[in-house]
Length: 126
Image 1 (tube, rainbow, N blue to C red):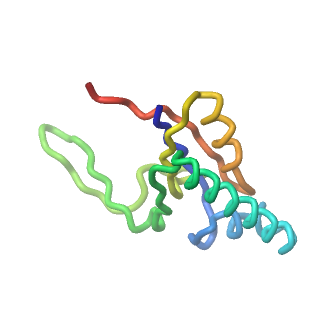
Image 2 (cartoon, rainbow, N blue to C red; image 1 turned 90 degrees about the horizontal axis):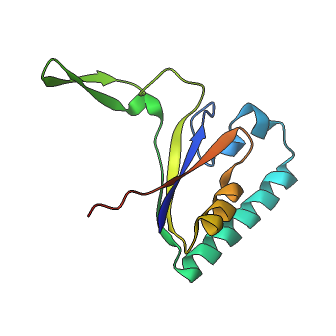
């Protein structure tokens, strides 16, 4: 079953890895970031080797987004992020796991300082 792990964050400035640019991330010592980087690299290596990692992308600054809304039978484009929120979508990882439990185990490792990881099953079109 495929699951999408959505990373929500609001770094200032917008940069990746986002955890280094959030208030919480800036408060951590460099050694903690280096350790987290090693663990994350290990996780990605594990997911790639097992075939569970399908795709992943980091996203550009929400200020560079164009939003399209349906209005009066047509679409209306506007600049900037989708909503005025504390956190924006910073990136995603699509994984293919044998069980929901495995997907939860993986997703829990994606939350970082100043960021939230959301796990959502991918809908299968039939």
